Length: 233
Image (tube, rainbow, N blue to C red):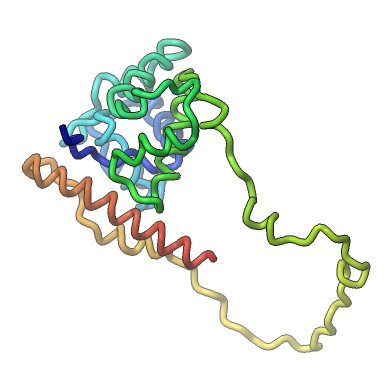
């Protein structure tokens, strides 16, 4: 039997998601929309947050908060952890089929691939889950938690000590009169420009159109993530 088509998991940084929960703790609105987060987050972050809330079932199609979201926001300690774990188990069902306390990184990655995510965004989806799972006291194996820091850069650097001259190059003599240059305009990311033109979610759409919107948002973010990674290289 073929696996059902699943929504792409949240890929917003988990710290940003936690910040939203803290904002909602100050007072839960009757509807979560752009006016709630626009003063705290950028357009791209806000859209990713709204997508995360929808795919996790924490808000209704019209933006009304689910009772489970209210439990997570207002509860403390073990009660909050239990509510968050319930959300994770409900959405990440393929991941919880694993014995997460013993699973390898490859098994974990394979489970996420069942969501149909591509390499450009899978790492972000996995990072969100790992931090959310730790918040919910879900036991994760050391293989899942193993991270590689700066492997690419350290592999290219030489281990030989450099000479004093190489460490401290002589400063270039600066001209007495510096040429006038125009200040560089503020850089707007490609993601920001494209996502600002993406249509806002409309709860009056049919279920099929709503699903296509969520799927299209995921694919758009994958493409933008790959483009921005190539710009940084």
